[in-house]
Image 1 (cartoon, rainbow, N blue to C red):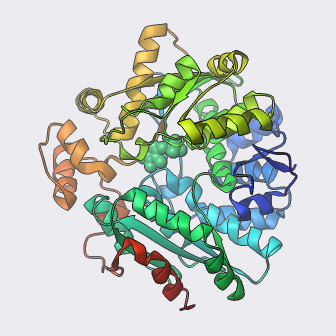
Image 2 (cartoon, rainbow, N blue to C red):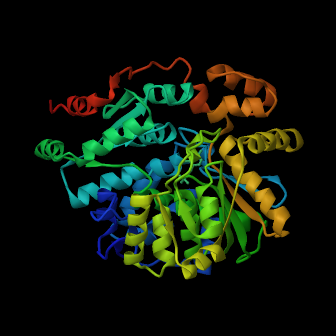
Image 3 (cartoon, rainbow, N blue to C red):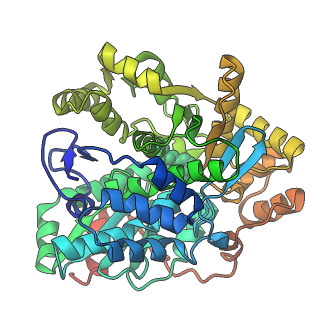
Length: 494
Ligand SMILES: *Cc1c(COP(=O)(O)O)cnc(C)c1O
């Protein structure tokens, strides 16, 4: 299997696309075809562990990795890192609605599923394409990605990671998670500014030829752990394959029986992974895209018009507060019959005017596979409260958005196909909002965590409980024009 860019034809190996992250033409890397899993293999996987399922799916995409390399990456990522060694269990709080819990990892959000594995894939890829060199991962984060990347890259051979966050723009819990990160190869730094300032600073470093040159002479390459890297998508396909196997195993569906998948969506990475699983033979009926008040994707899927020219809203599901969903580019490529010229044209329109309209044929293809809905903060809070009181199940604000959109879809269409809903964060990760929704009033930080536990009895995940009393190792906070200097100092170059 080879990989190409969504904006022009090329032919690269898996290791090459994982190291490069993004194509030189600005496009995203995609496989030129999709492997199909046979019924016989599904039977085997149904009896297998999560780790074995991951090894099988990865081996279909990473042809230039040896079975030993894949095994060691997968085991390093998932064994001993997740609660009960069960990375993606399926709960069923409401009959017919299966919650795929993706937040049992070290940072309590679904990004762990990919970011525990990506550093290992990157390290092996670099040893194939650029042996002896150090990969320097630069991240600008609004909260979740930074900590998940730090935890994934900490002490991984041949890598260093530097995370910049807006000092006033992350929650108290997110800041503490990052500031307490241990590891010889990690640096964390607050910026006096907002997320855009951090992001712009990182982009400027990537674009700076002089810095690249300095790093090059020190035997280092810059790379990114952002969700545009194909190495983040493959691990996400695994849990949809795994959910299908678990639905079969527990008799909730018969072999081959279709089910719907509902995903709370921001950058379109998680739901795209579900679409990829469908291409590989998982019997998915509808893919349901759930948004918060930043509902640019709902409008797009309903009308074929993508228009980011609208107010940006800060919501109680901040990881979905996004107006440009980068991974949508990959879907446009696949559903247009692999047309890089169309994709290039649409992305140019998006860059210039913030808007594009897809051709009718493409719109129909999108609507055949996808349906969409959105949910306000008030509706999400109401759902959290009701679900907890009636079923005794506590969910976070992002998952609540998906559950609300799922319920509305079922009521509106009468479609009774079983659903898998991606549950993307532990309720304790967004404790203040969840506490309030569950009827516990206002509190922040550890106080919100304690009161939420007292109110609901839901167990506090180890990584959150363990934060208390951890030493703060990273206190740096700099002006936004000091990012280059901070990076070069950390790397020992200046
Ligand atoms: C990142 C994130 C999302 C959005 O996922 P995408 O792949 O960007 O669509 C949803 N929920 C949580 C908790 C997240 O951290």
